[in-house]
Length: 74
Image 1 (cartoon, one colour):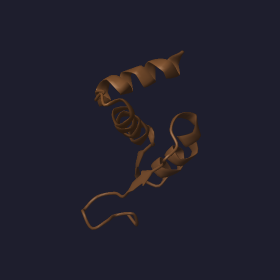
Image 2: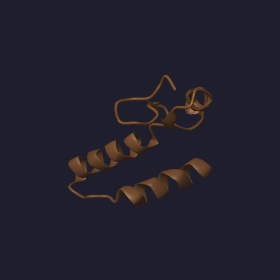
Image 3: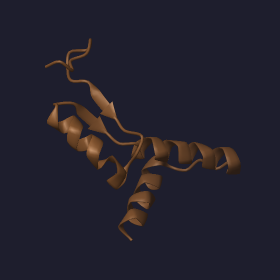
């Protein structure tokens, strides 16, 4: 397809939004055959880095993801 990059495969659409705010870009990317990711991973990585910078304590990215997903459900 037209969205094939130099690495042999579809290009990636990366939306910095996450959750319901990223639905439109996800649907569009899927409709044109692009890989897609939202900004949840970036949010978590930045939060973990900020927490460590401010407190000196390193938080597990996996644990932060579990807590964020649990908070989204409630």
